[in-house]
Each structure stands twice: as structure tokens, then as C-alpha cells.
View (cartoon, rainbow, N blue to C red):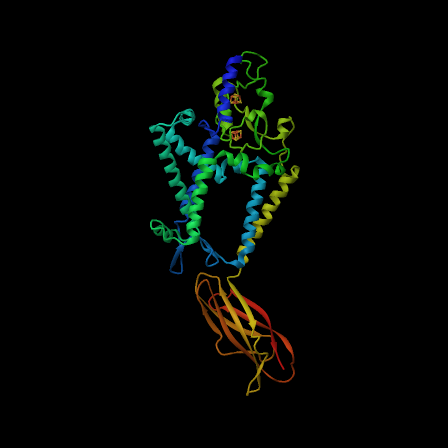
Length: 463
Ligand code: SF4
Ligand code: SF4
């Protein structure tokens, strides 16, 4: 390429890098297809799951609902209570460890493919491209003076963005308030104060982040991009320009010393964060692979092998051998082990969680009571928590002292997912052999589900 041609090229690239909003050229290829597959997959799950219903013992409820007001999280057949906070903590640790593992393996792969910022920016940019045209048409429209056409196009675009952001906000809030109850309250704005706040906030947040801020979030706001480097090891694969093969660029394909890069700048034009990957690894790079798609097309056109830009590790760049097993990559091995441990811990916690919780409180008002029949009585309040989604009858018995028995009713019905406090009296004959404070046990078992059983220790006071 000539010197003047290079200057024009450089000027063109400047448009994408520094002149305000980035209008990336559309890319096509393997990574672009994969990105859109992830967009479809994640969004079908997000927008669709809140409409699924779950039938449980004749009652139909929303399949996935985070009912904060009633302190219950419903996830299909599983109902999580505040007592299941450990499980929630394990899920969060598992998600963080999975992110570390993926980052150690292939850099910011999550950012480039599955991060909500990337996903929504892709959708908003798609709407923009449908209305305003390709990247050059969008650039021209932005730089041109205001006209009736420009005003109309921009108004429709912002209107569609707003509608999409509003639907996203309704869906989001619909995971906390049943969406079928929420939706009819929106036209008259008879939503509750918290629903109203989150609807407005999430709508504005989506509109501003995905429509207005876009790549600036990845470049300047995202804290993850700043510390992701600590998870890398020399074998972490990142989108990398093969400088050995590409340089010297811009001399012409007929020169035997020329590299394969023809300095066409297309890899920069397609980059959603507006960087030039040929400048080396940069924190703004989200590993989306669009520059790989673009450069592969250029290489195919000029008859050179594809892969001038590809996923490469520091080791591969230096010509060293990429380790194959995890044993040679301690950091990745640690993340993989943690992932396996937390997965098993989560599965075990879920499988082992009891659907019956019991609290036994001794009545502090009276120490003990002596009856005319010669018995000693203590009073208790027993809180029966039925975490199952079916009604249960629980049988309560006591043990620990000779002749210890419950006075009165021993069987209690508890509605699904509810707590029933019951007052109980426990008595034993006063033989005079046992004195003071003695340990005793309450045994509670479901009548029709013998594996649902709990034992609680408490004390019995004698004169
Ligand atoms: S797309 Fe490929 S050939 Fe074109 S400038 Fe980028 S690296 Fe060079
Ligand atoms: S440099 Fe390539 S991989 Fe990195 S953000 Fe830009 S297009 Fe995506």
C-alpha cells in the first residue's frame, strides 16, 4: 500500500477509534454466529422462563419466582427458604469459580459472548442497524446536520430502544412479582412502590447501558476488565494478532519480506470496542473474536492461510509448547478442583436438605408444675416448619426420662410451605429419683413420609 493510501486508511480507522460513538462494521463468520447463538439462547431463557408455570399439589404457581416478601425462592420443584442461604452462597461461589476457570482458559470469553452488557448492546445495535443502515450510513447520519429524516429515524430508534428496555424491566421485575399479576397493573401504573422503582430503574439502566453507553462500559466502567489479568497464566488463550506472520505489513504481497497483514483495517472496523488488536493484548478487548472472523475473510480473499488473528497463549506467541494437561497448569487445576468441590457440595446440600424444620422453646414463664396425680409438667412451644409443597401431618413424641409423655394432642396438620407454632405440655411421674434440669428429646416425623423426621434436644425441669 502506498504512503497516501496508508494515510487514508489511518484516517478511516480514526473514525472508528476516537470520533465519539463506535459504529462497528457488521462481521460474519464462526464467532459472530456463536455470539448470536448465545444471544438467542440466553434471551429465550430470560424472557421465557418467567411465563412457565409449575403445578404442585393442585396449586399452580410461577415456576421461577424470587418471592422476597414471603422469603421464598421457587425454582421449578425446589422451594428455597432463608434457611437455605448456604445453598445460595454455594451457587454464587460456583458461578464465580466457573468465571475464573473460563477466564484462565480463554480470557474474557464471558465478556465477549455471555455478559448481559455485550448481549444487550448487540440487540440494541441490531435495531440501530435495521433503521439507520450499515456502519458507514450510521456514521454519516450521526455527523450530518439535523433534518426531518434524521429526526424521524432517531425518534423511532429511541422509541424502539425504550420499548425493548421497558419489556426487559417488566421481565426482570416479573421474577420477583408474579408476571401475570404484574402485567395488568402496568397500564394504570397501580404497581407497588418497589415494583415501580425497579421498573423505572431497570428500564433506564438497560436503555442507558446498552443504547447509549455501549462499549464505554467495557472500556471504562467494568471493574472485571481491570483485574481479569490476575487469573491468566502464560497458557491462557486470548485473541491475538500473529505479529511474526503479519509483519512487516503494508509493503505489498509481492514483496518476499512482506507479512500477511495488508493493513486493510477491517479488524479494527468490526471491533465493538474500537481497538486495534495488532497493538497487542489490551484490557478493552472482550475476546469476542469478530476481528478473527473479519481477518479470516481477508486472508481467504488474498489466498493466504486463515488465522493471522486467532486465539493464542503467551507461550504459543513465544513459540513454546502449549501444556496439554491440567497438571501443568496449577492455577487452572485449582479452579477446576474448586469447581468440582463446590458442585458436589451444592448437590449434596440440595439432596440432604430437610423439608421439616423444628424449633422447641421451653416456656420461660413457669419452671414446672406439680399435678394432683403426682406428675411434673413442663410447657413448650413447638414451631413446626413444613418446607414441602404438600400438606403434612406431623406426629410428635418425647423421650429421655422414665415415663415421659405428651399430655393431649400429638398429631398436627401443617399447610404446605408454612409454619405452625403449637403449645404442648410434657409430663412425667414424680418418683423422686430424678431432680434438677434434665435433657430430653422431641421427635417429630411426618405421618406419610417417614424419612421426613427431626429430633430436637431441650430440657425438662424437675423440683
Ligand atoms: S484484518 Fe487482517 S489483514 Fe486486515 S488489518 Fe487486520 S490483521 Fe491486517
Ligand atoms: S480486538 Fe477483536 S476480540 Fe477484541 S474486542 Fe475487538 S473484535 Fe473483539
